[in-house]
Amino acid sequence: MRWLAALAALLCLGAAPPPGPVAPPVALDVLLAETPAPKLSDYRLFTGAGQTEANTGLTPYDLNTPLFSDYADKHRFLYLPPGAKVRYRAHGAFEFPVGATLVKTFGYPGRRLETRLLIRKAEGWTAFAYVWNEAQTEAVLRRAGARLEARFTDPQGRARTVEWAVPNQNQCKECHQLDRTLVPIGPNARNLNRDFAYASGPENQLAHWARAGLLAGAPRPEAAPRAARWDDPAAPLADRARAYLDVNCAHCHNPRAVASNSGLYLDLDEARPAALGVGKGPVAAGRGSGGLRVGIEPGRPEASILVHRMTSTEPGVMMPELGRALTHEEGLALVRAWIAAMPPQ
Figure 1 (cartoon, rainbow, N blue to C red):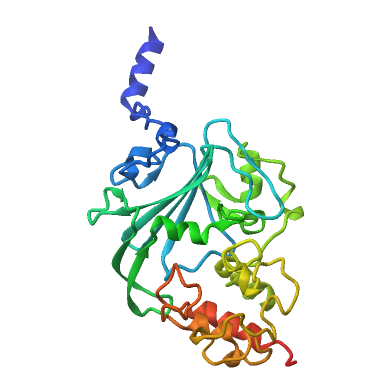
Figure 2 (figure 1 turned 45 degrees about the vertical axis):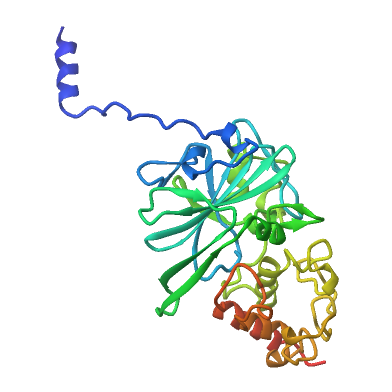
């Protein structure tokens, strides 16, 4: 019986406590319901007090170059139904299975503002925005959007105030529309091809997704396209500027989206100088042009409509026209430097 006494002593000296309650799985039936849930918690995407922990089945991810959103922090997750896989594509958004959900929370240190869901249903993608309450315990559906005042400190250490615009459902459709169909923007091969600091250690996201059984058909990361990080000083200036314009502008400015009639195409695959705005006049001249002649005047950013519209915060002039209220000064400086480095025509 000596082993019984030894076991009892071991237990008394600090054996592992019994496991806590297991969180219920993500509510796939609620995600796929015809009507969106009134509260974010109804989906069980997050657990813990204040919904601060991602539930089992959610995978965090990040992008090489993200869309600028008034200096807000963004936390992105992918949810896939058990056993489902994403299908790799070298160009454009991946092919996501029914039930896949892209989750993105926007906020500033100490305050979450909204969580947006992009849900892949049998009939296609749907988008919903949930606004967090003051107590940071729950987020509620706001189909019509909302305006929130937020305070934060920018990268230069300046105290800033912004009127944060939660998009309404029609605005979601405008930015995420390709061939008149709602689609994701960010999660593609070239933007996901980067390392992420997982709890288990840093690993390339494409490799991690493939190893975890989330992604099918992907090559090794070195064989996949990779977009430059816009803020990586080691990357070529043109690559950084083009990646920035691709993410911030090309969801509208490409031949298959809402700004197709502009003739200004800013996607990363575009190679024609005129389509990028070099020496190209606007299709419809107006106050948005600022009296300037062409989209890009090589060597002269101050004479380029692209710079003028990126600088502005005036409705009807600024570009992008949705998703920001502030000028992204660092992104603007990047594009100005790229144009200034172009040899004059």
